[in-house]
Image (cartoon, rainbow, N blue to C red; front, side, top):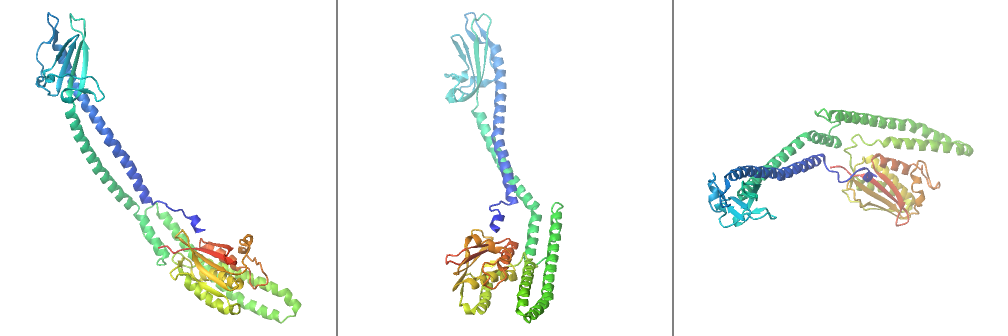
Length: 446
């Protein structure tokens, strides 16, 4: 069936390209947004430590011990921040039980290494470098620490991070906008092809026109060649079928008239052969009609009107059977099938129901989840067909009851016509006991 030949929920090429670009762009932006600030922070901390090591060397050179064994600094430091209370630049020295510290620490100390790092006055977060060394005439090592407040560094880093995220966001929006334009421009030939196909489908053009990129042009050339070849074959088939019909109509009529004048035994021998000849002609003419309309892509037919027209004709042909046909189809139901082909299919199914129904035939639309197809149902209240024989009767020339006039080609022609439109014919038992024929046909494309 048509529903089995189409996949649902397929994303467009444009959405796929934009989604892939957005995902990669987001990954790059997030990576840069988290890694770049980390690199900057490490760089700034290393720069601060480099300066602290200079101070560490300077203090190490000034540390000395007097004659009483007391440690002291023999000179002043170059940076005045060491003398300003809570300035953010500190040093601390320990020798056995002796402690020295910069005036900037005032009455506080550099606390130990906690979960948040080193802390100084007013819970300042510190960057600390340390060194141990020995002085002459001393048995104990000197433990020297130099620290700097990193709050200003972290604040600067925070400002840089906000600026970086702003730049990355603007860049992401710009790149995504440019990517959207690029994708739209690249897919423009496909939109042009879609418009041209719509013109062909509507019967306003017989080929795809215009210039296309070199990657698409071979496909366009092949499609145009295929359309031309299809139209030529279609016209040739229709002409041949018409010519054959006219050529054979008169000779068969003459043969039937001549056979009717013969004696009964001779008629018994010749009539089946003539009927078989007529069946073959009807079958192959039906196959020729399956080629469809010239503008097959643009064709569409209102089903309800055709059902009404066929039922009027059948009411006259089978007036003695007193059959009632109820057409429940909405007037706006359309199928993408040529009118004559739809008449062939609907006509065969309705005529079959007129032959076998007891009193009632229903024609209605059955709900279908696939919006690209329409399911038409013709059911009657006759004797129906056994489930195991429903597929058998769709074969060429199969007749379950030889007492009823017919060629055994009707259901086969309907089945093959439905398949030529990528549809289907399904036979089953009706709730009324008769035959239920579900004819699945494509709906017109917008």
